[in-house]
Image (tube, rainbow, N blue to C red; front, side, top):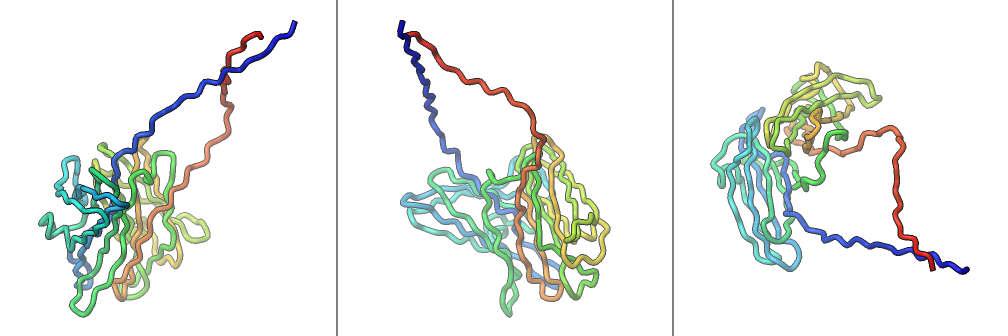
Length: 271
């Protein structure tokens, strides 16, 4: 007797829903700094594609629980771009440091910013991009910051500040482990971040007990199982005050191989 084996494939079709776009500018300022510097932030937002966009900007104050942040809304025509100069002052009336959360209610947007010393003889500063919150670092991953250094003499060399933004509505713990370029540990800094808090640790190598560091790096993790965050470093020239912005590069921590059960399901029908 001839028998035929028929395999009936079942195709599952899912609908992909595009979630609202949220980008985080992890550092912004309207504050006085060392050596008589005056730090300001300009925000730039552009509508993408051939459609307009509407968006909300929220202020995530440093050292605060930002579960209910201050905010404002703007609308862009298709192809339009908007610059908001010194927006911590002009839009929020806020003095200090913060992060910014920019969410598109309609359309898609590009977001960038510049934080700079507003000097009458000429400005200097650093570009701080808008980071998609899907690129955050989660529990079980680490973010690496490279190109860091520190001079114990405040008149020469560089200093390194490390900052974080908690992207959850819960308090999370973060750990910063600092290394020399060859891989030797230089110390650890631990901080707890309130819901949606921005925090910056200035002169982070000094905070960890290190002295001069010609070339170093940092590895940042969260110790909270539901935590996820964005981190960055700002490496500042002690002589001029000029700074370089460095975004944490996320790496998944290796996990040991383990056996996994895989089930293949089909229907067998005799011919």
